[in-house]
Amino acid sequence: MKLPMSSQQNLIRVRVWDLPTRLFHWSLAFCFIGLVITGTVGHAALIFHFRFGYTMLALLLFRLVWGVLGGRWSRFSSFLFTPKATLAYLKGKSPSDADVGHTPLGALSVWTLLFFLIAQVASGLVSDDEISFSGPLSHFVSNATVSLATTYHTNIGKWILLALVLVHLVAIVVYSRRQRLLVSAMFHGDKHLPVPAPASRDDMRSRSLALFIFSLCAATAYWVSTLMPVF
Image 1: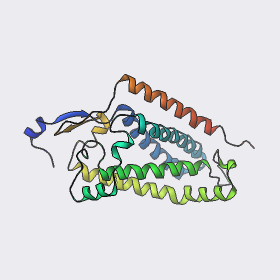
Image 2: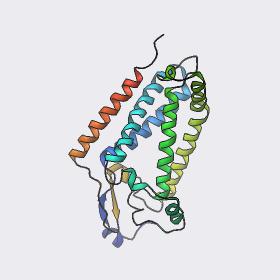
Image 3: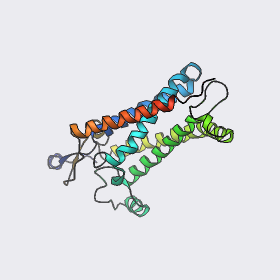
Image 4: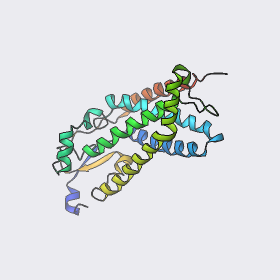
């Protein structure tokens, strides 16, 4: 529901999503689309599939660290809701800060997506189709593990992720009808709230820290790529 003009004028502007979190969000979305396309095309596109995969590995490593060191509402501690709190939210009893960062349902979506994205990237690293590609870590695990990971990566995980992303997009559309600034906040970082709330730190110092952390994560992903067996 769109608020009356008088109510909008009384809202408080709060920085919720820091720049590193926003860049992570849209970079992850771009990588996901790239992975879906290159994975579907296959053959010559597989080299780009690997590159998108390593980029996503770097992004996920960054998010795990930024979930501890990032801005107030990007930290995992800000959207750890108990099943009881989630059930209460479904009954219309929202936690006091549910409209600032992630809602309990939004948090559940984030945790689920992160889990399956990590599982997809991890399984890709140890997959081997015995024809055109081999993950860089496939020679470190048993043949049974490689076979299981390959089956999951190519036949199970990708469909789970596509379904989760579809549900995520539908939820955003539905929720945006109630709160029109939901998507735009992930572009400019701010939300307009009816009550004061602590803002996420988003200054040059925190952005420089994020750049340093991502550089380390990117270096780690590159190092993993160099472990590809040479025949």
